[in-house]
Image (cartoon, rainbow, N blue to C red; front, side, top):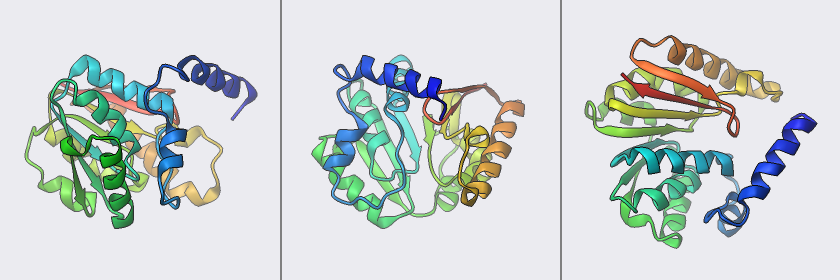
Amino acid sequence: MGKELELEKTYIEDLYRVTTSLQKKDFVNKTEWKDFVPVIEDDTARFLQLILQMKKPVNILEIGTSIGFSATSMALTAREYGGTITTIEFDPTAAAQAKINFIRSEVDSIIQILEGDACQIVPELPDASFDFIFQDADKRIYPRLLKDCIRILRPGGILAVDDALFPVMDLDPKWSEQVEAVHIFNRLVADSSKLNSTLLPIGDGIIAAVKK
């Protein structure tokens, strides 16, 4: 991360340090299990909350729960208008910790966790069953799930996908397969005749798309 980008990030976080009701640092500190995959940044969480406030999607799908920070962030907004969240997590330990965190944040009543492989679960979901989909799972499954994500998204629904800027980030070579998968996914979304999309430099990059 360059110096200018670091200054921008610090400036943005300072602006919202007091007004943000849920912050990543506090959420992580209260989480008992520490060996989890990275969760979204605070600016990404705020972006998701803004989308939910504007669109008010009733049926929300998250692919990749981890310890539940992103789902909790969305749930705090969704409960204000009657929205519900279904979240998919492959790791049973992560899913168990997420459930504890949902209860602690008092959002467990509107979140359902599906434990298992998203590549098996998502293809079984009904057509046009979700108003909003947020994906932040293993990047290698991004291209594989795209067709079904579009299928289960209602017309006018929003697809938001994290880590879209992996291809231009200075990452360890061990992430090469994930980087390549994200690049393929980004191109598929940009070229899709069924989506209107853009890539936003929020957090590690977010692809935001609307189904035509």
